[in-house]
Length: 72
Image 1: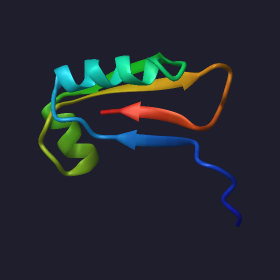
Image 2: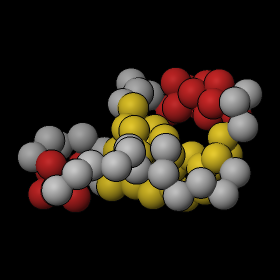
Image 3: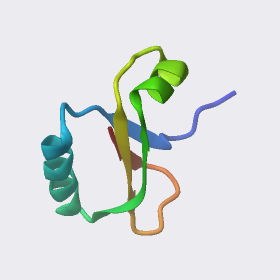
């Protein structure tokens, strides 16, 4: 199997303020919020083994279907 490109890059951020600032930063390069979701602490622990609530924001760029950014 050959990997052809990167679908999504995930970037972890320490808090909601940093998330907001990161959205503003990436907007300067043409990215926009396309999807948002969240997990409470129990859901995150079940999915990832880490008991910490998480909000995720996927950023899209124009009509691209790869090279996306997910801020968490």
